[in-house]
Image (cartoon, rainbow, N blue to C red; front, side):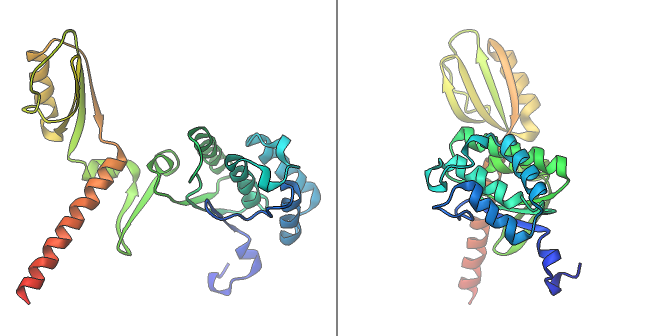
Length: 253
């Protein structure tokens, strides 16, 4: 295909699902809305029934196909929107905030469906989302855009390796440990029998050794910072740096 020719055969290889915009007709049953899409894409009826039947079974909405779209729950509507986006079997699926507004259970089911479908059908999925859980569970490659410019492009794990300067050390004690742990790192949370610390990566081994030597520790756990926290810190630092540079330039002028 030549992209700028925008031929129909090329355009049908793509599909877009927007979490905040409905593609289905509000006052029609979901099945009839999907039938309209079948006609638009010129899909063979037998193939249409096969695809819709398979998708509705995977998404557990077979019994909702003849319900008015406006009477469906938000999670059910999003599942129907997914079916609508996939009935013509696109090769590239664009997702814009696909889990926005959904409850935790529905979010999990939608993410699981997207992960399995992408793997089984070998399609390319491009996701934009502010929900880090969506990104962590669905994305192998991550692109971070800052003020219109690509700031990072690579594996999700590389974000933590490259930009996280700390790890979380969690300890559980055998008996009450009423002491100040701030000398070991930033105290995130502390109870009489536990403490959670944010420790610089280079100091984790030594800090853990000191804690084990000085406290009655029965359990210790070292974790990476959540991706969301790493990105929040990253952009916070960049904003501070940009503001400082702007202030210096203004002073120079």
